[in-house]
Image 1 (cartoon, one colour):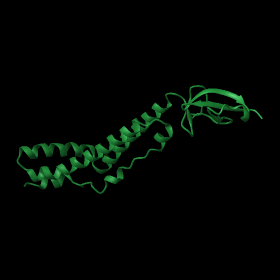
Image 2 (cartoon, helix red, strand yellow):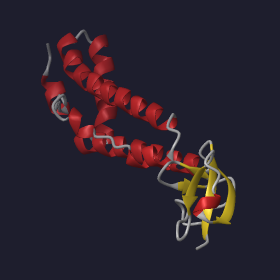
Image 3 (cartoon, rainbow, N blue to C red):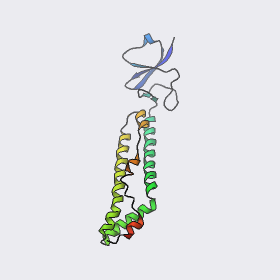
Image 4 (cartoon, rainbow, N blue to C red):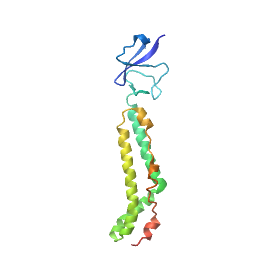
Length: 168
């Protein structure tokens, strides 16, 4: 029986052949393609990349990385917004700055907790983004997960009213 095979070298399809098992050169990796498509649903063709489990067309990896980075950035914004509304963050920054000018170090220290919490989330975001940007196969990008709930315990749960009530 003759089947369609992808001839793989260095994780790239270098040829598509109709061959029988005994005709395959053992110095290459051979993947039987009957019914298999690329990650995006297109036909496997010469030049496609192979991850060991999926085929994808050149450029697809970068597209998936970009999508994952956008999802990550949106997720961090939603997580922070779930805890502190955007307007309140602006007020907290104002309170922090004026606390130093008004010689209210305890008020500044109270608000500074939020700044430290936000910076820790920003650090995690940067780490995740760097990891995703350095990935070289689709499966790793798709399977990469991030969890901002790990910051729930360190959330200082400060309030604007709480800050304004501190008069040192």
